[in-house]
Amino acid sequence: MLRKSAVGIAVAGILAGVFAVFAACGGDDDGHGMGGAMSDMMSGRAPEGAIRVGLVNWAVEPERTSAPAGEVTFWAVHDMQHAHMSAEGGDIHDLQVMRKTADGSFELAGEVKGLRMGEAKALTLTLEPGEYELACTVVEVVGDEAIGHYAKGMRTPFTVTG
Ligand SMILES: [Cu+2]
Image 1 (tube, rainbow, N blue to C red):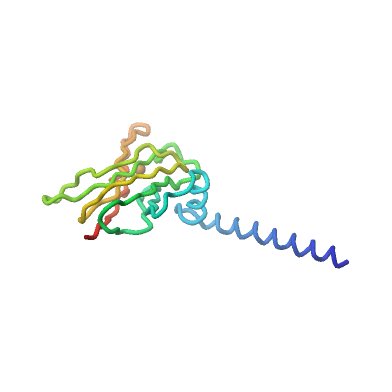
Image 2: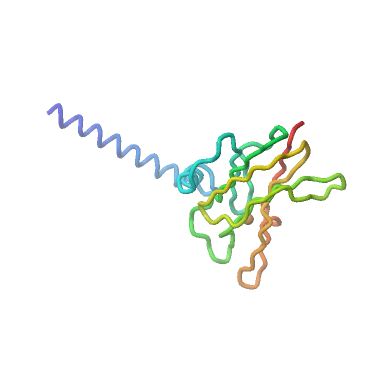
């Protein structure tokens, strides 16, 4: 009897765990949480000290929005996991790190390109203090429409402190 009830408790524990996973997935429509964890499982581990940058339709979501000057490693992760509607686009994202120049325009400091869903790539740059932007500048044609990821919202400020 004792043995049987122990098994019963173990089964109940497993079911509770499964339910928790489903609950986490159910609420994950924005690329956070479970989707992010799955991306990391599929694409290996982030380099030590890297700043994780989630790429989703249509946002760039760094885990931190600033870093000290010097060597900075970004871990760009295409967080979307579910099949996209073909009309939506976003099957591929880039990460462009752009520095704001004196005249207010942006110049490219470095980039990783062509990340498919679930893929991740590291990008290590030596950055000077200043204002930057993390962006995705993919423009893709879906049907007759050109979809510019940057215009859709895939850009966010990033500060490098001195
Ligand atoms: Cu993109």
